[in-house]
Length: 242
Image (cartoon, rainbow, N blue to C red; front, side):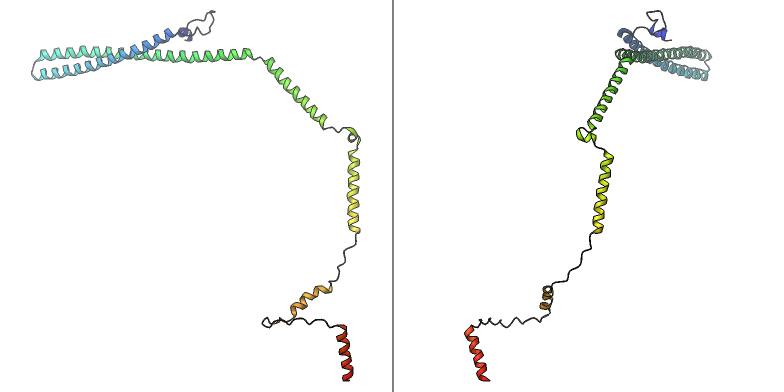
C-alpha cells in the first residue's frame, strides 16, 4: 500500500519513496475540496428529485380521482424516472464520499510517514555523531578522574612527620591510664567538714527579736565621754560620802 502511495524507492527496494513535494500536497488538498463541492451539488440535486417525485405522486392521485387514467399513468412514469435519477444521484454521492475519505486518509498517512521519516533521519544523524566507543571513552575518563581524586584525598588524610610514627593504640592506652588516675584521686579526697556558724550570724536574729522603739519620741543625744579628772573627782566624792 505504501508503494502505491509513495512510489518505489530509488534503489528498487522496498523503502519509502522520496518526500512528497508541495505540488502534490496542494493537488491533494484541491481534489478534496473539489469533491466536497461536488458532494454539495449532488445533495442539492437529490433534494430536488425528491420534491419532483412527491409532486408527480400527488398529480397521479389527483388524476386518479378525476378518472383521468392516461394523465395518471404519465405522472407515475415521470415519478419512476425521477426515482431512477435519485438512485443514481445517491450512488454518486456515495462514490464521492468514498473518494474523499480515501484522499483524506492518504493525506494523513503521508503526513504521518513523513514525520516518522524526518524523525528517523534526525535520529540517524544524531547517532552518527555519537558512537558507542566515544561513550565508553568518556565514561572511562570520568571513572579514572574519580579514582585519582579518591587517591589524592586518601593521601592528604595520611599523617606526616612525627605523627606518622606514633602508635594510636599506645596513645589510647595512655589516655585510659590518665582517666583512671583522675578517678582514683577523686575517690581518695576527704569529705569536706561542715564549719560552725559564726557568733555574729546570730546577731541579726537577736536584733530582730527586740521590741521596736516608738518612733514618736526623739532619740536622746549621746553623752560626751568623761575626762580623767572628772572620773577621779567622782571617785573622791563617793569615798567622802561613805
